[in-house]
Length: 557
Image (cartoon, rainbow, N blue to C red; front, side, top):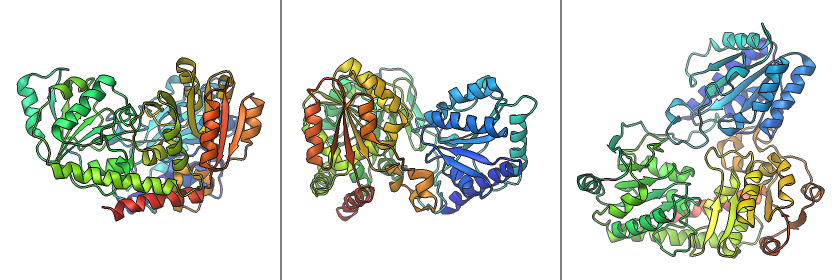
């Protein structure tokens, strides 16, 4: 994909909004998101449409409902793909029963990313069932967009007659999403071979798999803990094959008490300038980090075996050469193949050591930022601690900077659809079941689920709010070059964290540096009830430190 493809997506969205405006739409309520970038940008650039940016999709739905009731004309809702869309459901049902015209435009992944384990992707087709007057599934953007104006007029009409109510339009977009982004996309798809359809393999099948593992190999473990047996067995397999393990921070492998250098501590840093491999074994969901995805795509011609016992093979880039339906732990125990050359493993371990030194240098610089505070928390929390990492920048910063250690830390996160909705409520459930939990959230994820403070106040929960003034993840994405970036994506919110904490009865601590943050969290571990630690971060400084860290990856390649 090229920058021209991004322009195509924007023109497509602009044609749709031209038709909506011509048909009388004057209000749009958009929630920040990446996949919905063409839609939000098209709305923001219409001078005859007033666009309101509302962080919480549930709140956005009811806000649009109020606008439509007051003005008695259709209001458009925009959301990114995944659970964001599902948060409209209460407002959609209300609009259905109260006969209020809403036009729901949900961004979606394109067809090639459906049903293959792609992150933040679910079946959005017909999501609201009989509660909408009509449902339309658009194709991905294409050259001919002249028909979209008439289509938009029909959608507006369906929302008003014969019975007013919501209409749902599902709009898939391919990357790149921002018009000035010229980053490459996935290579062409190839048809994988399905090796096996049962959970245990016989000797000929094992020999067939072993024969594929020749030369330099990598074992990838995605963001799902497949259990202690699997962790033991996959590390033993890595030793036999002389292969490194690229493990997501939620895989359970990076902080499970073992000290094995084959488990790469900084896979994202390594992947940004990684050498080519000959084969890959891939377990669990697809990796979330874009750098690791890019490494896999750069080796699309290599043998890539995706393993899943349940047949839900995670291959969003369509680059797997083989699908293997087998029990992951049993496969690891039974599999034997020729080990990779010693210089292959040592080269990657040397890069991992360089990454550790560079992470330490960046995080020791002094200023408070997400990566530094998370790294300090991972290093200072006691063994058998439970950490919940909210989506967006928090979990990525943990992936980038926290490394690995011979300590037991149970890491949790909501990576099924990677939404920022419900993160604090999920942490409350963990605390109720497991005892003390340290939940780290960005300011928008915290605000998105602020009602969960009603649950939190009586629970053994430490809430760390990394307040970087809005959607910090978008600073790292192409949207940051758009003139409408601040309003449409970063969306800083004005709210008083201290007042919220105290109004819900939580102990409140504001911290200005990493040492204060670590001390506040340590004190909270023995406190009754919930504590909120408020870490105020300079987003420009944070972005600069991250870029410094990423740049060292290229320098050490």
